[in-house]
Amino acid sequence: MKVVVIGGTGLIGSKLVEKLTAQGHEAVPAAPATGVNTLTGEGLAEVLQGASVVVDVSNSPSFADDAVMEFFRTSTGNLLLEEAAAGVAHHVALSVVGTDRLLESGYFRAKQVQEDLIRESGIPYSIVHATQFFEFMNGIADLATEGDTVRLSSAGIQPMYSDDVAAAVARTAVGEPVNGVVEVAGPEAFRLDELIREVLSAGNDPREVVTDPRATYSGAPLEESTLLPGPGAQLAETRFADWFARQK
Image (tube, rainbow, N blue to C red):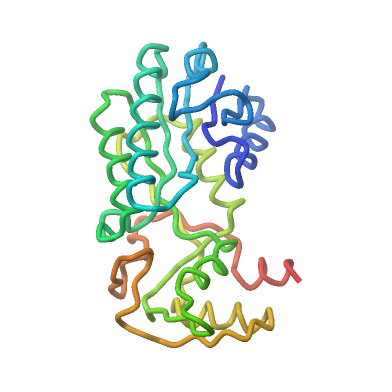
């Protein structure tokens, strides 16, 4: 089966291409580096010829509100248009647990627009909602940093290993369209502030993590369960401590 992976040269995309290829599928990475640009439409028609499934794990190069909205609206629209012309049977997109609860953030408003376009396209689809990746914990700290202080909520977070994210997306891609959302998450929940404090301490990072219930996440306020998956989520096996120990 031919599976085109949009964003196939990135963190998740490259892992996904490797996993699908190992399963015997024709996994084709599609990104500007391979001559495919979803924003301009360059190379889309050609790469989608003969494709049964398209998996979109791409992300905006800029997280500024206007830029990220333009990216997801335009790239998703172009992609769905070309998929319909090519007769693609299954569109899979990677999104984020809690997207519809984070709409005060420009980034998550754009992700919601992406999801709405997919639902309205008429193409059979599956949307994978994943929790935040282990690899992005330092990035969360950076976004919340003011001087030498990291201000974070004590809301729950249930992050997961990027390799497990790719495995979940691969399973979804080769399965039947669910025409809905599949939630995936790590095996254990943490307090956001406590987890980042642990990560920074282990890395001898001098920044101080301050617990602030008013602190936002990508510009959106957090409730206790905003970032947590629902009871029906698929839980990955890799524990944070085991992954973290391998990074040292």
